[in-house]
Amino acid sequence: MIHLERTKSGKSRDIPICSKLHEVLTSLFPRPSGSVFDLPVIMLRRFFEQVVKAAGIHSFRFHDLRHSFASHFIMRTNDLPTLQALLGHSTPAMTQRYTRLSRGHLASEMAAFESAIPVSGPAIAPRTAPPLIDEHSLSAKFV
Image (cartoon, rainbow, N blue to C red; front, side):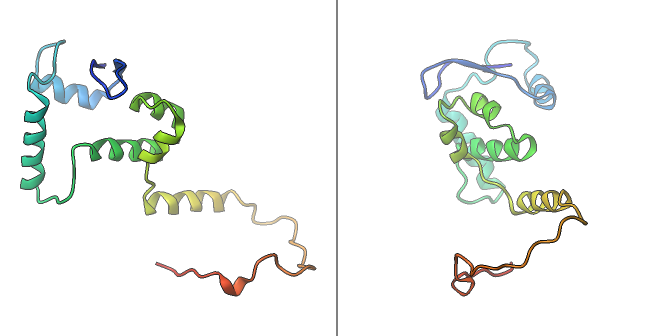
């Protein structure tokens, strides 16, 4: 677990971490408990900025890591309430603002949806009434 004492909401909370992160942290910091980083936040931000610059990454802020985590978590688990608790948000709407679904994820979800459609089934009856929308006013293109 990682314990956060100072959060934006003013409420401390514990966050479970995955075993791989635990292994990395214990290899870097062999102490079983206590502060992981004994540095002021400004120093952590400076180190982060140096690493991002050295990696040639542009327009990436420390806070973007939260958005990346949220997006990957929701694409893997589809569990919004758990993500909300992990991020410490008070509303699902705020949590949804943090997530972005990748094109690949959207495509695989559409493929899963398509595979759930029965191949043989009742035929669709021909349309007897005019459409509610004008198909010619819609625009879409393949990318």
